[in-house]
Image: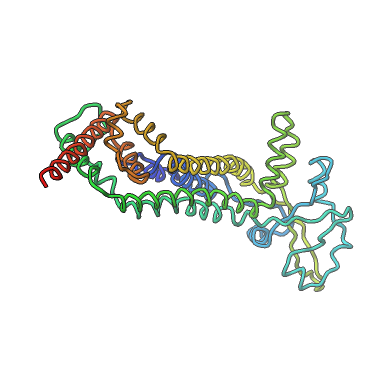
Length: 388
């Protein structure tokens, strides 16, 4: 099983230069890897067997399984049923022959024999399981989209600036020279390019939040009322009411279902054959989608909190200075204010992205160098004004 998901381990390796923050990495890269892992697991018959296993009087079992998989199986609408114990009985014996007097064309094309049984319960056809793997694969691509866009828009800029700065506690001669060049860069005016950098990253964060909400809606459409059903199921867990848990989850992911096949008899009359089918993968689907239920909600909350955080820091310059001071091991406020005097929010953001890729000691040294260069520029500017 590890060999099936081993390629994803390289995808999750920590890069030398980190262009995403923690929440962005969780949302775009970790979620994508989780969805791909689930896709591989559900596609591996070697570990979990066939998705459908049927018993039938028809000797051609390959045809029976293919027919039930293609045309769809069904269960009964047992929302108000007193217990699950009666479900298998109703699936096997609940339909009377008087409900099968329908046209031949409708029977063959829709596989919709007897929409109601004698107790008035409707059939619920199950066709979603044909789309579980494609939907998970689609979701993985959608979640990776912001990371893909940001990687293209970022263009290796942080890697170029932080390439020679190892995350170590000591400062080497090589790193000191590179810090000097980096300080010269931040002492210059790059407001336009930094604004484009900041706006692109913020757009990707907004896209993360939108994707989280859209995927929650997608699951609710794909698995009818998925979220409301699982809220009821989770409410039964604190009371240890596992019968209620099984009743609700089995309605979404039934483990046993019925399939009917129409054929012509020896005299040319229409006959039907009942087939009872097991869906082993629904045992795994139940666990996978419970995890995704929590994970998607967590990703949506984190993405929303990150947007609130971003708005607060855009509006509050004093808070930006405090965070910057914390990254410099509480350097004096005067030094920090001189170093970032005239900096916009986008300049501060780019400086913070650099700080996440170097050690605190190196970042403190960088701030001192920026302060020295900016104070030197101010002195030279004042001297030129006096001489003129």
